[in-house]
Image (tube, rainbow, N blue to C red; front, side, top):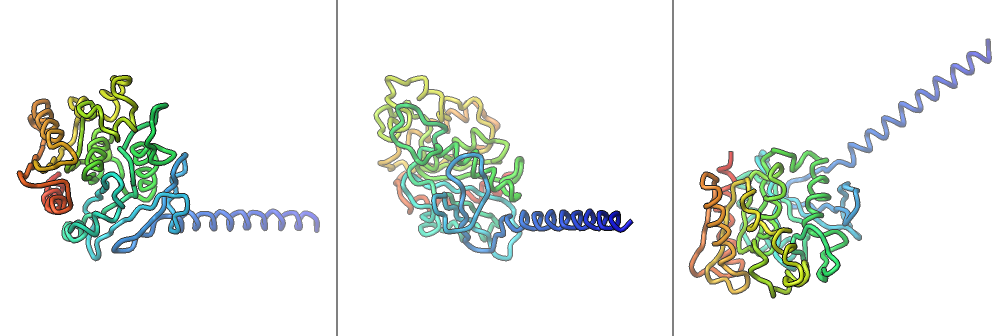
Amino acid sequence: MKNLYQNLNRKLLWQILLIYLISINSLQIVADKLDLKSGIQTVCLPKEGKETTLSYPPCTNKIPVDVYTPENKKIVANVLVLNGWSFPRDDWQKKTRILASAKEKGFRLIFPEMGKTNYESEYFPETKLKWSTTPGGKWVREILIPSFQENGILMKNGKNFVMGLSTGGRGAAILGFTQPDIFAAAASISGDFDQTTMPKDRLMTGSYGKYDENKERWETIDNVHRNAKDWKIPIYLGHGQADKISPFIQTKNFYLKLKELHPNLKIVFNDPKDAEHDYKYWDSEVDPIFEFFASIK
C-alpha cells in the first residue's frame, strides 16, 4: 500500500511539473510576440529560410525594420513603405513629412531596410546584383509579411497599403500585383514597370541577365506593365515630368494601360511638370497618397 501511495505521488508530481512547463512555455510564446510602443521602434527579421520570428536589436546578420506607431491614435491602417535603390530605410522619415501625416491619419508605417534591390522575385544564373541570400521581393512576401502576420499585422483582406519611391515604387507595384489579398491599394512614385523598354539598364541586366538572351524572362517576371490585365487593386501613380533618373514615360504608359484595361478601377495619376527625382517632389506626394489610402473602403 505504501508503494502504491508513493507511485501515485510521483505520478501527481510529474503531472504538476508538466503543467508548469507548459505554462512557462505558453508565457514565453506570449512574451516573444511583438510589443510595439508609440513612435519609431526597430525590429529584426531573418534573411532567409522558413524562420519568421521577429526579434529586437541588435540585428546581427538580420534585416532591420523600423515600425512607426502613432501616439494616442487608433490604428486605422498599416502601410508598408519601400525605399529606393541604396536609400536607407529612414530616408522617408528624415526627408519627408510621412511621420506627421501618418500620425494625423492613424497609420502604422513599416520601413524595411531594403538597400540595393529591384524587389526581384528570384535570382538566375546570370544575376550579378544580389540584395541578400533571398531576393528582395521574395523576402518581403515570404519572410516580412508572415512575420508581421504572426503578430496580427498585415493580415489578409485587412486595411493594408504599400507605397514606394523610385525602385521602391517598382517594388510597391510588384507587391500590389502579387499580393492583392494583403494590400488593399498601392502607391508608386517615380517608379518603373516595364524593364523591356530599358534593355541596357545596368540594374535590370544585373538582376535578370542580358535582355537579348533572356527576353521571355524580362517580359514576364516582375513586369507589371506586361501583366496589367491581371491588376486588381486601386493605385496612385506619380512621376515628375522633369525626372532624369527614372523615365517619366514608364509611369505614364503604365497608367494609360491600366485605364484602358480597367476603366472602372480607382486610379490616380499625378505628373507635375517641373518635378524631378528628389525628395522635394516625393515629400509633396505624401499627403495626396495618404488621402488616397484613406479613401479606400
